[in-house]
Length: 340
Image 1 (cartoon, rainbow, N blue to C red):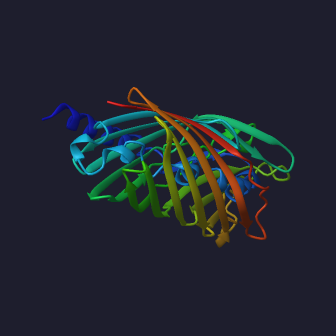
Image 2 (cartoon, one colour):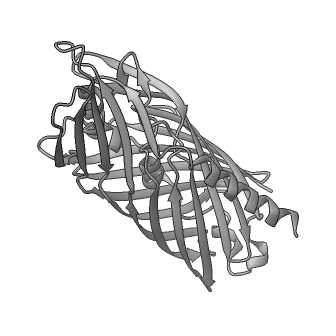
C-alpha cells in the first residue's frame, strides 16, 4: 500500500481512538458551577471550532494560478500551525491535510493554551487539548469553476468538565458532532482572483456528565446530578473574495453570518439518603444567537509556504435575552502553511 495512503488511514484511526474516552465524565463540584458553564454564551461564541468556521479560508492561493490542470494543484500533503492570540479562547491548532486526486482528508488538533470563563464572583482560566476534528472532502473543477463538498466529525477529546478551583472551565463540548459543508468558487486566472460562496450546517450530539455535590447546609447528604446536554445546531454562510495584489501577496475578504440555535439540558437529581429524586427537562442553554463578522486577511506565498495574518471583526452580535454575554472582541490569528 502507498505510504501516503497508510499515513492517512493511521491519522484517522488515531483521531477515532482519541475520542473514545469521553462518554460519561465524573466530577465532584457544586452544581451551580456546572450550570453556569453550560449556560455561558461567550463559551459558545469563542469555541475554537466555530472560530475556525468563521475565519477559515475556502480558497487557497494555489487556486488563483493553477487553473484547470489538476496535476499542477497544491502538493498532496499540507501541514500548518494556526495561532489564535486574542479573545476568551487562545489556541494553537495543528491542521494536517492529505489530498489524492479529487478527495481530501483533513484533521485539526487544537491545543488551548488559555481559556477564560468569567463567573459572577471569580474569573478562571485553564489550558489543554481541545476537540479534535476530521473532514473527508470531495473537490471537482469545471473550467474556472470549483465545487467542494465535505463531511466533518468533531470528537470529544477536550475535557468538558475541566475544573479549576471548584469552577468548570470546559476545554471541549463533550459530544461527538457532525458537520456538512459545501462551497462554490469562481476562479479568474487572468485576474488572479476568486469569489467563493460557502455554507455549512453543524449538528452537535449529546454529552453526558455526572456531577456529585455536597451542599454546605447538609454535608451528610450527597446529591448526584446526571446531565444530558445537547448544544444548539449551527448554520453558517459566508462569501469570500481573494486576489493577488502583488507578486506572491494576496488579500482575502470574508463576510460571514452565523446562526446558533438554543440548546437544552436535562438534569436527573438523586440522593444517597434515600430521598426521592426528580428530573428537570428542557432547560435552555441560552445559546440562541446570531453573529455577523468581517474577516480580512493578508497572505504571503513563498517557497511552498503560506504566511497569513487574519483578523476577525465582529459586526453584529445578537444574543438570547437571557444570555449573559458581552460584546465580542477583535480576534487575531496567524497561520503558517507548508505544502509537501
